Amino acid sequence: MSEPRDAAARRAIAPVICYPDDTLPRLDAGLMARAKDGWKKVSETRVAPRDAACFRARAGQVFRISSVDGPQVGDFNLWNERDFSERFYSGKTRALHGTHVTTGDRLWSSFPGLRPMATIIADSLDWYGIDGFGGSVHDVIGTRCDPYTHNLLTGGQYHHCCHSNLTRAFAAETGLSLTEAEPHIHDVLNVFMCTGFTRDTGQYFMKASPVRPGDHLDFIAEIDVIGALSACPGGDCGAVHSSDEAACHSLLIEVFDCAATQGWQPPDRNGYAGGHGAG
Ligand SMILES: [Zn+2]
Image (cartoon, rainbow, N blue to C red):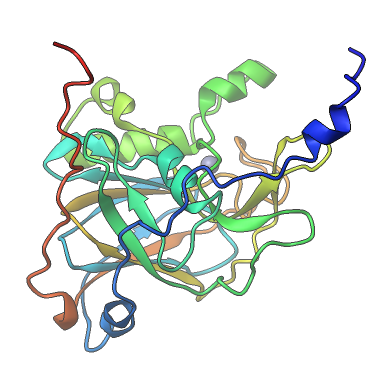
């Protein structure tokens, strides 16, 4: 199509932020700093390469996801422990906090709850920022690698994509069958993954993660949760995924009791009264 005469003027209009975040409830910065004072580890879960594992955390506990033996990306799901229909809402978290999350950002739950399920209180990769390609770490833009897209693009059958790993882990944790568990798997937080969109074509890209052993992402659980983490078959996601080609490493999840968050009050569910204009 030929451009209209005022094309340049239309393109020159300045953007506005869709969801200004100055009215978003924030976690107290002092509390985030104190949460680890005298913390005591209560559980530890190792996630094997190309596999996933679940863990549980009570409201007020801190959980840490760590790189332990090599650069590795993790695909992360989160549910309300007593109501699996309330689960992490990647798209709304992106709309509120941006494409990548870090310290102070919250993991919001699906409608109608729309409340913080967990909040990031420390991020050892917060120095990375946004690189020259527009890439950054811990994205909420990717969906999770899955066998359906892999089949669509290649015709192949691969059984250790994050979607399948998360399905197996959630089924094992809850006693659901694989068929019952699969619909509960949802779009992820890509822990440690370095991603962005190409400037020329707008395509989703990945590049080798800057994560190294010892790097970690810490959260306060704001409600009682089940988490599931998959050690992505893409490894550091620097080249390929959805295959056994990449070097792949384990990940560690630790859960801690914290004196500073004793008696934690979970946030209320969203205040919209419902009705949706009917009647
Ligand atoms: Zn993956």
